[in-house]
Length: 295
Ligand SMILES: [Zn+2]
Image (cartoon, rainbow, N blue to C red):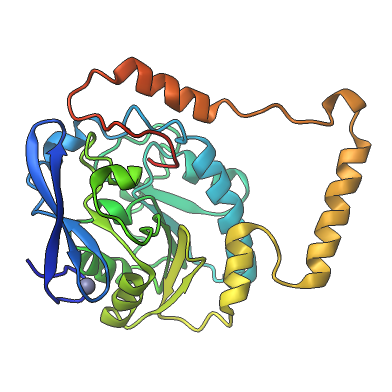
């Protein structure tokens, strides 16, 4: 099998059961480190339940991503006059929230019904063929042919901002990284920074990455440095003075709150994830190891 990104040989890494039923081998490219499954024949089955039961981050993630995309648009895409597109937008939470904030996003998704951004689906606006920016969060790991998909996105916009977790070094088996998630079967492509660089080269674009989970590919000149992108992705400004001002602002905000509210409550998200695991652990194919951020 050859790498779906750089075309060099990919060697078998491990074999596991996908959806508890299918014996599937995962392959790693010897050159760029990209990991891909066997040809994913099980996807129709995997998307019967498009939002999987383990995704307790289904609301917090789009809210967090909204904040990042606001920073990005304000920095690089103010006043373009073009709409924005949320590709693989799920139930439309991200699109709804961005529109609440005044950013004209449209949603598109092949697998999931539009619940929260009805009337603002790309299908409602068939004349819109160009977008200032495409947001594409937790989608790239679902793509069986990333180069083909990315080329199609570049027909619609010069810039794609996206998230996918970078594969840690030294992976040997399925249990080493819960992002493989074979029990829901939707993740079929796993990236290294080198693989993303190959993806940029194959599509004539430039890569920005925080080397963790947020990335941007563009054919435009955004006048943006890597450090500035990392600042946008993290919410911590790359400029020292701005960082200090942000800290001071946060301290003032804390002081202005009543004493009883000083400490925010601890999130229940991870505990809820564990609870879902407990409830469902008898499902065939569920891995022994648990938590971590996943979708
Ligand atoms: Zn490769």
